[in-house]
Length: 361
Length: 241
Image 1 (cartoon, rainbow over the protein chains, first blue to last red):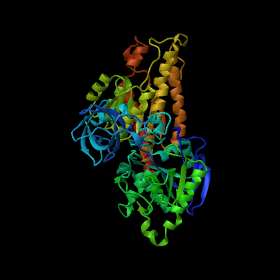
Image 2 (cartoon, helix red, strand yellow; image 1 turned 45 degrees about the vertical axis):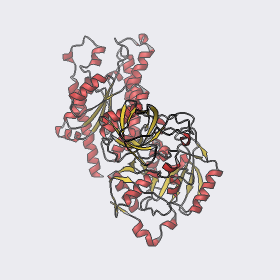
Image 3 (spheres, rainbow over the protein chains, first blue to last red; image 1 turned 90 degrees about the vertical axis):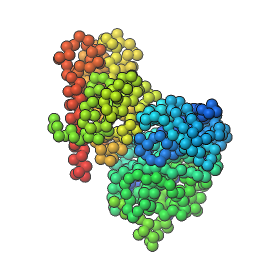
Image 4 (spheres, rainbow over the protein chains, first blue to last red; image 1 turned 60 degrees about the vertical axis):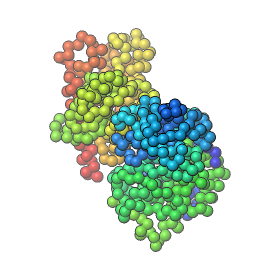
């Protein structure tokens, strides 16, 4: 597929491939998305804002230039902002494909890093020359100020222009906890939210720290996605319960929403509000308990995002969908076109239905 | 005003722009005194640090709402200081030409500066915080934007052209945005606090007798009562739902 190279969240000619539960394909303008949802359905989005997670600076022991990409955190608590997992690159910028970026200088625990106004210390190396745990100095307010003022959103080599934060914040972006944008949410604008309301489709959100999509390093990428903290509000759990009780579908806007909801559902017989860390992989073997359909960007086979789609549809259907995307010139990557995939009928077999569907309270 | 209503401010997450002087400072103090969580924005780093020290538990953020480039940094700092935002008070204001001047003598740059601070800045910051505000609304919170306007937005006072035009635009922006956002649970409220004894008023009318002017503390109490009333109404709605 062609990469979308212009950072426009809602291009007027954006396309939507709809794959229904029977595996039938339909092409639609994405602007008509609301019409592919039914009254009584619930659309669930990730309202994480994207933090400017790319920090340029120096590895002080060697005085070498580095780029630190914040990539993981153990919780979403706003005052828990000192320690991060980070991927470190050597000199260069996003114009070089991540695959070709220089390695950082060898790093040891205790090494000091100067990242603009921020000071940090390497806590641990994590079994890989590019991967470290680091700790910022200062108060939470000062650390947030440093990240907000010095950081840049993680850039993509396939885009012509550098991205600004307003390019990567969705229209519902709230807490700045995502490391890369939850880009399925780019379809949202307030006109769509009003259209959903008119159409009787519910809208709810959760907050999930969407992690980095690719490091350019095969051995690191094999470890993606990293563990991702999330928060599921009580109002969303209630909306899911009402939706399922009335026979509506829960439609996840993006892989991060699917990962968070299915993680929360796996923790007990009932879906509960609160915080968790999504550490599971979703794939062909996963039995979905909450999510009935997913709206996502287009993903190519072999990526973790594509793997997740295999929980919704069988390989023959996904192969046909991939061919259709290719044939009809769909664009891929963050600013590309979208798919709406309804969970295949076969996976909701009668025998497993009772235990597969989790009651929400 | 029903004082018992003010208890609904406890824990409310409020962002205030222009928080180091005049009405903004009075709001920061009064909100903290009522148990709200408060983060404020102002341009002067030293003043921000002073006020943050003076008002225990408040979060001071240095920035300029009239600068586009500051918008998202401010949104990040405000939401992370408060863990979300229930109420945004767009209070930071700019007079335009000092001393006041007839429109025909007003430099274009002074008009643009007044529009940048009083209209475009609040528009941008509200837009950047709308995700946080609507998250508050979906969780049943009393999400609101309070835009500080002026009677100069309604009455054509000679000499107040830049300020009056910018506040008139802010007033109308508030009314339209309220129509659009009310169905989503976010209110946009324009408030005219009256002529107050503030640094901005002193710039405009240097020889005014302070005794004839409203104290900013009193205006702040009136705005708190308004926010509390909105919060109580929202809470009642949630109980009914």
